[in-house]
Image (cartoon, rainbow, N blue to C red; front, side, top):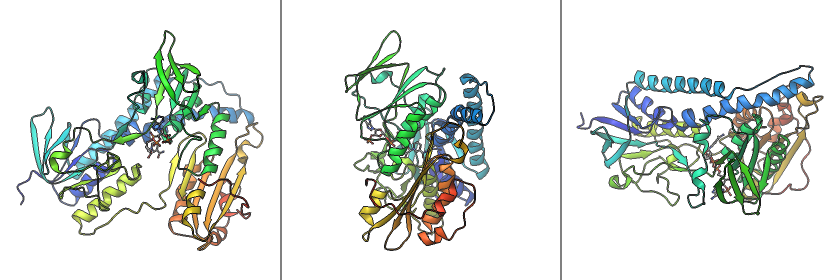
Length: 459
Ligand code: NDP
């Protein structure tokens, strides 16, 4: 019997923290978890889940347009307040389920901000409560980052506030070119908001395959988003009629809302890490080894606070690996290779594995690239000029498919399945031996025959 209050104390009840706490408690350990906001963390409360509801709400506009091509007459109107209320009820329900599941597993849930006092002690601020634990797991996630030195930045919101706007703006400008910027631009444009996306680089989604980036940029413009590339703010000024975005290009754009989606940073502020001997890396994330152990012997960290691969399913896998390593005598580290990811832009993106550029750098004997662009059957006679992109990247040496890139309807659903084949290391011949499902969009993935002759531009 230890002298500690808990065997494990988890700081942060998001996807990673909750999974680790439940598994450990179900394994018979005494576990406590602290959460300063609502149980569920970024994904459930202010990320993936409400974002996906917003994407689905806004996509109806496109569906109504398509429906007209099929002979329907649709008179539609959208009630932002009603949608927000329904969304919030569902988020509260999910948060409640997370909290209930912690309780069922026997985890003590403590509402409050936990701060490390030493390597075995946390204090719950404002509650005059001190807790000791043999081991501590930090899973505090990330928070939005804004360029604090930009004049007028106080007028900008982040995605966190975008989930709670009291009313739908008429005009919005979104700064950034990553996941969040592109997803929210699609949401607002779909809901009829005049939407401008401004990004400092040459094209959106840096790090993704160049064909994906170019294709998506073209498609979101077709959906009415004004995309301004190679440009940044010089200031934001409040006027009588809105917010004036002053841009490097010399242009001024007035909008009602300005949203910055310029990245997220590990949530480490005022956690007392130094008092416990937990060090940060150069990016300000908690430094961990491959088993998620920090520089303090009894303290581990998982999820976005470690800034390895900032995705919910990855945090959950890191939690499982932590539990296996520490409590089941089965050292495990998560394998970050071939993790599929989706951008819920409109149209959406699904990718797994290497971009063409990455593959050119890593496949020593060269690569084969297969690309197809086509109009999805659904739009055959609707007047829509939306096109789908599918791309396979194959290692010439092993003939394995090392990258799959899809932009278009259902891309996130397709990529989940394609990821099984990429993770399993299947060859192009094995993909080709798989009989098509007809008529589908996905069948193109197993019928791609023509190799692309010239590079479409490596990343
Ligand atoms: P990202 O890191 O994806 O993108 C940040 C964007 O902000 C980049 O385009 C970056 O430009 C730009 N930027 C950074 N600093 C500045 C600056 N000073 N001025 C102007 N622009 C700037 O971050 P997000 O906030 O979009 O998302 C955070 C993370 O959350 C993602 O990396 C992802 O891991 C996760 N996420 C995942 C989702 C999903 O799975 N669907 C959805 C949403 C988030 P540059 O490229 O030039 O650096």
